[in-house]
Length: 211
Ligand code: B12
Image: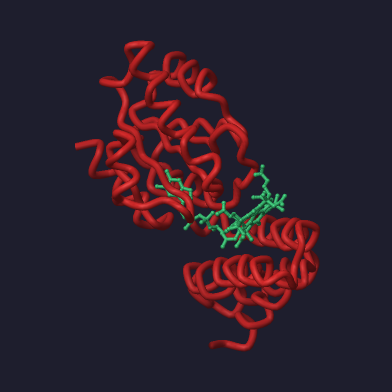
């Protein structure tokens, strides 16, 4: 691993926004592939933060400052994940489900989809089923992307799919789901059209659902 990637990893673990930004910029200047910076430096650090939280070494404040450092670094990477203007691949409504504030993964999926020329309507986090339904209705979205990071909020994906059915919109939109606790099997059980484990697979899935 390049030393600067390890420094990015460490700066996110320590929640140091300034160092993260400086090191991500240094890695970009050194010509390191943005995907390596993202996956080996940043996403790996968030996984380690999760492990430390599970072991009782980190608490919510540490998770929060690590997340802020990650988001600052992501902002720098965004232009490198986005492609030049090409014909729209389709419209996507995205959000983290009701009760859930984890938005880093969802933001990353949005960035990568944007990079692949999808139009994104990002509803943010803690999005109620009604808000998803209303956004699908008003934007005429082709795809809806729901994210959940908590086992307790995963069922809100099913509730949202039910709400789409009730409002007569389910057949008009493809439903993609994701987030660390999800599985392909769970996605099938709740009646989603697809699940992807990470942001690059989410792009491949979205493209396949548009055919
Ligand atoms: C950062 C973090 C927080 C931050 C979130 C800040 C933010 N703005 O997002 C804060 C501090 C707010 C937080 C709070 C809490 N958290 Co938290 N958090 C995390 C942590 C460390 C990292 C999550 C993350 O950003 N990962 C990095 C991103 C890039 O990965 P990702 O989200 O999985 O996304 C990727 C894929 O899943 C996929 N994907 C994601 N969404 C979608 C959507 C679609 C459509 C598709 C196709 C793909 C896809 O693509 C993404 C990119 O590759 C995780 C640990 C972990 N290992 O996940 C715990 C974790 C999720 N949190 C946890 C807990 C318990 C909590 C709290 C309940 C703690 C508390 N006691 O208050 C609260 C809940 C608050 C709430 N109501 O949401 C637990 C959940 C346990 C469980 N089984 O439910 C975890 C797993 C930690 C742990 N190991 O115990 N947390």
